[in-house]
Amino acid sequence: MTIVSADQQDLQEILDLQYLAYQSEAKLLDNFFIPPLTQTLPEAQQEYEKGYFLKTVNEDSIIIGSVRAYSQNDTLYIGKLIVHPDFQGHGIGTKLLSEMERKYPHKRYELFTSSKSTRNIKLYERLGYSVFKKECISDELIFTYLCKQTNE
Image (cartoon, rainbow, N blue to C red; front, side, top):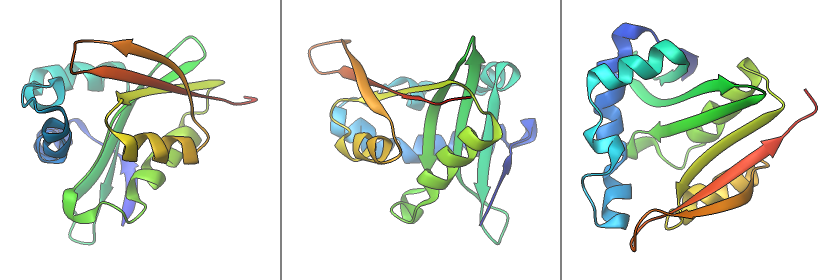
């Protein structure tokens, strides 16, 4: 398993993995129209142009994980940490998030997830993130925002 920067030609494969990885989140929320499941290739390309994408590839060079981020002021905003369902629970998400922080050091890191995603929240808290805000999006959806401060 290797973590490297993703290239623009990887975006469709990452988007396909995103659709697969977010099925469990959609089931949790009972909503299959969440933005990660409706994102288009042109939208992913816009994100790519303004930020950073990392990918995890297995020994067959298949992308099995990814994370993306963009920088604004002293904060790195991290999003869409995804791992293929067959490879979840093996530390790949932890390694991706840690590599994003290592490769793009900032004073502050921020990310968010659904309040129903307790597994994600526990992962982020284990990696030093703390909840600082909750935002009610709808009756069924509350976003939990987490951040991590550093001495950079």
